[in-house]
Amino acid sequence: MGASSSGIKGGRNRTDTGVMATPGGRQQRLAVERPLPAGGRVLLVGQNPLLLHALQRILEADGHETLLCEMRREACAELGRANLDVAVLDLDLGLDLLETVKRERPDVEIVAITGSASIEGAVQCMRLGAFDYLAQPLVDPQRVRNCVRSALAQRRRFGHTPGLGEALEPAEPRFGLVGRSTGMLRVLRTVQALGDNESHVLLQGESGTGKEIVAKAIHASSRRRSASFAPVDCAALPEGIVESELFGHERGAFTGALGAPGLLRAAHGGSLFLDEIGEMPLRIQAKLLRALQEKRIRPVGAARSQAVDVRVIAATHRDLKAMVAEGSFRADLFYRLDVVRIEIPPLRERPEDIPLLVQHFLAKHARRGARMRGIESAALQTLMEADWPGNVRELENVVESSLALAHGAQLRVADLPRARRLRALPTAPTEIPLSLAAYERCALERALVEAGGDASEAAQRLGVARSTLYRKLSRHGLHPSGTRSEGAGGPGSG
Image (cartoon, rainbow, N blue to C red; front, side):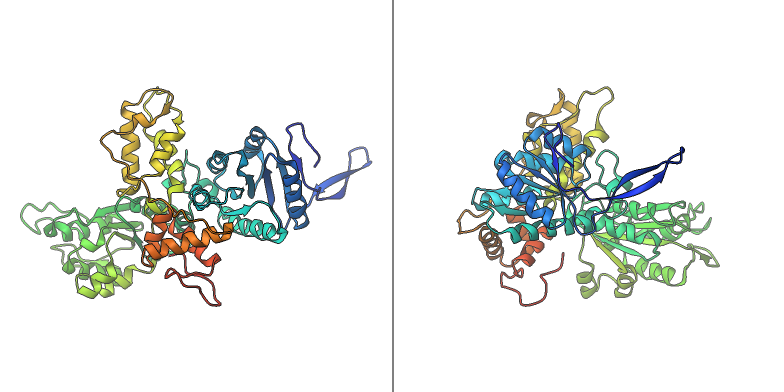
């Protein structure tokens, strides 16, 4: 593909020729594009033509197709129409270019080229969603190849999974799930894998992380989607009526009883969502376990049991294993429910999801006739730097309350609730070592030391998702304790 009027140049043509018979009997030779089995499509953006062409030669020799953009506006235009896998961005054009690419194409992995040798710059790129970094001058072609290969592998592992593209559209999220972070991609992947599975599911996550939305997604993607989804908040039901609500009761079973089927029978053939399962009384836990084992229930006051077929999706913010150890939760019920466990990460561990969530909530809560089209970058940055102890539920509340009194075409910092104190994430260390790889390793080691080996706290100090921290630790051969690992790969994704 040659140079185009937009200033975008392509890599080498990958075509075979074929022959097609035309209606007149003549043969017409056609060019048929061959797939690139090993390489991907890489967008190269920078203001230095020599640097771009050097990258092009390295990457095309490694089997990739490349697109070159020397102007920001051409790069932004190409984002909307090109089938891209990886974007290599020279940050001499500005750090906001990385933000733009992540916002416009969250499915594309980014490799940042930076000449600013500082931990602050490296950590800031990590926060904004860059997969990796290349330090100028680019003296090691193999480092470039390995970096892009790893980014491409990450893209294919998460970005090419069927159905994930639809699920990550902020304006119309699939099943209500919004996110592009590694943690949310893992949740989406598990939800889709459960489509042909009837196992019970346990959702673990802090309050406000969206456990009911994930439960609805599991139901909507399963073979039970045409039947009922029955939610019940175990923490909201008084102990005296939990049994009647779940198992139903016969008319006259107790004073004033008119008869009710109960949620288990209402969810027959479908899914029963038991929110805050850790609050369920032990006596009711025993009866629920028997119902799940025998697939039969006996309503209060009934003489005979009745068959039920439900899939239970349970959720909790508590440590059920610890509750089992202390005797406040039945071990047999725990193991019956904990067949498939999905950990839903808190919002502070996935700040890269905040722009998509904000866009989703702006569309959801926009007033009729309102001219609000988006959010100013300063306001978005304020939201991204907050701690969000109430997680996604708190973020939605802030967006909704801001819209109630906002004026103008975009949400501004001044529109955010004045009473709310947005707590900034901790700053990164500032000591400067000798190379960019050393900067990253130094930042990781220092964060782990200051956090006492606690991976979650270390990730929070760096302002990155815990899964991102584990990936970086593995790359540098570190354990959460800060020690170098031997042989096998790094820690799990936690």
